[in-house]
Image (cartoon, rainbow, N blue to C red; front, top):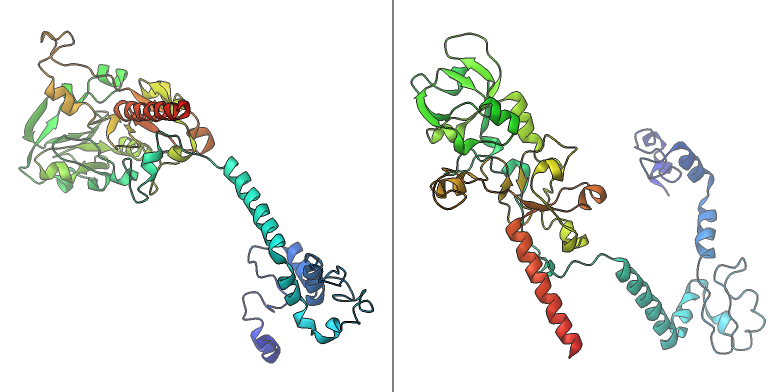
Amino acid sequence: ENFFDAHPERIPLSRYGDLSTRSHNALAGPSQTRMMKSMSVDAINLKVKSQLLPQIKQPGMSVTWAGSAGGFGAGDSKKNTGNGWNRSMRSDEWSRPAVRATGSRHGASQRNRTGKSLTWLAADSPKPDVAYEHLLEDEEASYGAGPPSLWPLGHEAEYVCRLGDLVLCSRLREAYEVGFRGKKRDKPSATELLLGGTGDALRVRRTAKVETISCDICGFHLADADKPGGCFFYYCKRCKRSGRRFELCMACHGLEILQGEGKYSGRGLHPHFLRCQHRTLIRRQNLENAYPSSPHLQRVFCDLCGHTVVGRGANDAATRAMSAVGASGDGSSKYLSLPNEFYICPRCPDERGLRFELCEHCATTLMERGRGIHRLQGLETCM
């Protein structure tokens, strides 16, 4: 007896009403609900029985169907009365002799059919490139820069700042106390804003009291110490802890958030390593050529080593190390401009909606590894 038959007053309190007649799918439409109401339990059982496979023929018996209207062996009951087999079996035991009668040949054919299906599926399943096979050995390994919330912002090379270190303020004294002295870069010039890039290595740092606040990316004036009003802005508490200053306006903070657009932030390997080939990567020299329809992108992280390839903090350490060496090696130029080249996958954005970038070092290393494996496979084939 159903619970709702014994307690009809509980039916309106149920989520689906009468569970024996209503659809158990909460997202089912009205047509499916009416169809489930019209189908009785007997009709459903008859439909299931009609889909059963024919039973295997016993010695001295003819093949009969389990889903026939007269039951198993209804048409051959007179033929099989001589051995008394049909009379000795109950209705719930008709399937047992069929299991014993399958034999090794039926089991072998079943395994062969299953093997063919698995072989067909394996032929269509994606195969990783030989250059990426060593990355699949460790299932718990984590590659890339991780989720955007953990990306280094590149304010300074001595420490790491993240998005969680940016604090929203509306007044200058909410960010910096009276008498605080911090080291801050000069505003970017109009030429630097026109040509793009951070230009952090070329901007002079000055230590002074905090009297005004301006955005370190666009140079927009945000607030004064003695004047009311001002705009909302973000300051970096990690830079403040180290005696530095870094502020952002609301628009530039939004651009920092958008840098993670299309980047893979899940656990494990990027889907590119499982479904794409290394030879399909394209070399790019800047983001304008790589993603012409996304002018807001200003940063590239390698999806293997996680280092910054393009963007703030990419050239600070290298520029300081070679500040006295010019392009010709004679020291005539104070700074050496380094090409921020990287490799992108043209298939991942279209097929999976994800960006994939590799730094030049990782791309070259994987390419050499793939060539070595192909060379060894060629030698084995010749032998």
